[in-house]
Image (cartoon, rainbow, N blue to C red):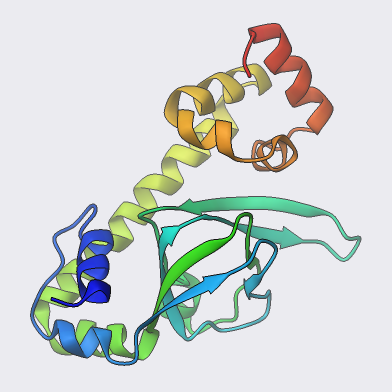
Length: 195
């Protein structure tokens, strides 16, 4: 088994068993790529034509306003799959960008390979539905975190749910994700004795 095939199976089977039927078709023209910190994987307004699997590194999805404000929408790290769901489901350009926070190593898979398998094989369709369900589940956890809790509770729960993440992501980006100012986050962390 090739290294890339082993990596794809490991990452894409992380939450849902990956069908091995026609796996070589999925991997046709797939490749490992390295990107530096600050690299735009894709920008707002684009329709991504690839799926990315994170082997190493940290990336974030960001919304940018016309006034230049940037809000962290989501983070991706080792073992994550970056699907451009809006493009997949509605063939719409994305209203956000994805950029690297650290140097990253990714597997880049043509989206057309994946979509043709989903269309042609029931096992791949089931896999895709399971991935959509997982995405919705994760979104609900984030909504609950951000909408139901006060600022201090948001910080506490983020530290409880994602201990490795909070020690890795720069404080200004964590503050953006939690919809706090860096000063507010710093005060809450100090009050709670968090690093």
